[in-house]
Amino acid sequence: MGPLFKILMASIFVAYIAVKWTAPSFDPESLRGARVLVTGASKGIGEQMAYHYGRFGAKIVITGRREKALQQVAEKCLSLGAQEALYIAADMASESDPDKVVDFALDKLGGLDYLVLNHIGSTPFSMWSGEVDHVSWLMKVNFFSYIQMAWRALPSLEQSKGSLVIVSSVAGKMPSPFTAPYTSTKSALNGFFGSLSHELAMKESNVSVSICTLGLIDTESAMKKVRGITKMPAYPAAEAALNIIITGATRQQELYYPWFTQIITLCKDWFPSATNYVIQNSLNYNP
Ligand code: NDP
Image (cartoon, rainbow, N blue to C red; front, side):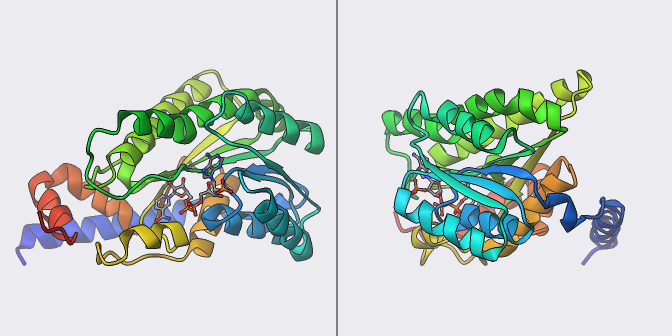
């Protein structure tokens, strides 16, 4: 290991510790009675977020397409301590459902403190082979519905000094094979909400924007896709969910979970060829 490499690694470590130490501290009481809308909460990370918000005593609205699953999650949220737990079934590929969901939450909760945009449409984990219609549909679900809901909720978030939380992926910062449509939607989210965040700050808005970059998380849908293809470790959905909630509650602009995803994205910029080699060789693929 050369001295330059050691200095680089030590600098990264020191910078990481400094960032962690100066991060604002989280007060769980700040979420008691908070009015929260979580999308994609019938399973996976969204479901885990709903349970955490429930334990913190928040008032929540959850959404997804499957009514029965939403009902079960809402019941569990109440049993964990949620002050309110309501659900509305909606398809984010529809033109009108994103607005309908925000209007439902505003009406039932009397406003919003947190809008947590987390849902994703299903997409294959495979080589791109020209499915343009699928990309267009996925853009509707994973991107257009996000900006539609954010715009609808902004006036209320402005009033409540609220937070907009966007669940994104390391794929949106560092393209990898087999995920072209998904990666496009996450890159679009990073670009749009990164830009919006500047504009809100320039307007001295009350609303904070948090963009959460996640690595591989052990949800059923993710594991089903990557099992046998990647050797990357998967991290627990409940912990990812808690980190997202804390990032929103402390009004931080960014989350990287697990922590090393930030280092990986930096490596991509600093050592692109080496990073590409590692990415391509970390996947089982026989042409
Ligand atoms: P899941 O596939 O487990 O859950 C997706 C959620 O979205 C479900 O609640 C599903 O509910 C809902 N959904 C799917 N299609 C639609 C639709 N057309 N309209 C409305 N709701 C829909 O996802 P994860 O929990 O794994 O991921 C959550 C977030 O985390 C996503 O933004 C994802 O990109 C991000 N992430 C996840 C990673 C991982 O490894 N798991 C890695 C990096 C980022 P229903 O079926 O009831 O509609």
